[in-house]
Amino acid sequence: MLKKLALFSAIAASISSVHAYQAEIGGSYNHLDYDNSYYNEDAEGTTYQIDGVYYFNPVEVKNSPLNEAAFLNRASNLNAKISHSDHEASWYEWHSNDYSLGIEYFIPNSNFYVNANLGYSKEDDDYSETRYSAEFGYLATPGLLLAVGASGYDGDYGYNELDPTFRIKYVTQAGEYDVNFEAKVTGGEDTSFNVGADVYLDKTLSIGAAYHDGGELPYNINDIDVFTLRAKKFFTPSISLEAKADFGDYIQQYNLRVGYRF
Figure 1 (spheres, rainbow, N blue to C red):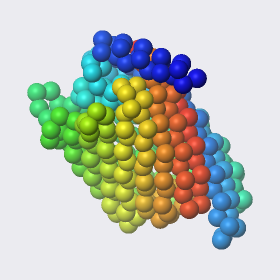
Figure 2: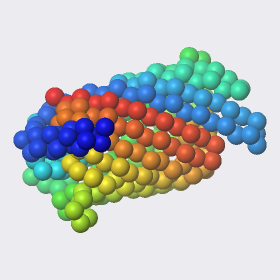
Figure 3: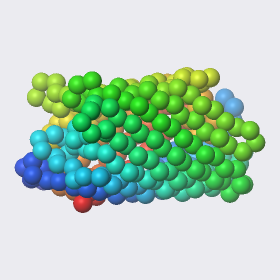
Figure 4: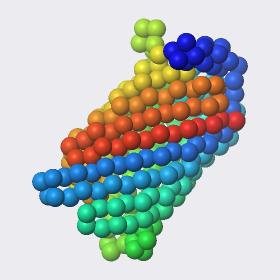
């Protein structure tokens, strides 16, 4: 098995230097378990999602990690997601559909960057919510993005919020390995922050970890720590598989995604 994985890595790495793509589609499965014995509460949810990205110009992989090619190429794009979730809790059972549309735009002949996202979700009890976010960023050096913005939502029954955000993404080299560092802070009443890092063992395979503190999670879970382990593998320059596991005070969450570029 290890020999086959090494062979796949060698083939994908050798092809990646000449590969280009202009779109990607993906499908993912997510399962979340919540168990709070202190309040005698438990819940679980399953989500199925389809996502897609279209780049305005072909993305050349060159000699970068396949997973970071679009970012390092400053590839402007349109992206969309659609998902369906089924939730069952000790106090309630519900289903929801979510839709989102976004744009990332790297301003030509400059180091400036903007993005915007609009989302809508509706539950079977007729509760609906509109989510939105926007960022303005600057590429201080190749591979380093600094961005400020805002994110919020407007829901039924007067639920609404708008919070400032600050985000950093940095792709660089550490010794013989490519590495990715990410951090995001969301202000407001429930301030939260996320930090994460990925190490590319080769151009096709990454392993990483992340940490989330504060903010609001599904099932109105607030102010808890969540640790994440994640990995992504390109078996060819076009086909990828990624896995993620979250572990928190009361939650466990698992996610699998298959992607295809063309």
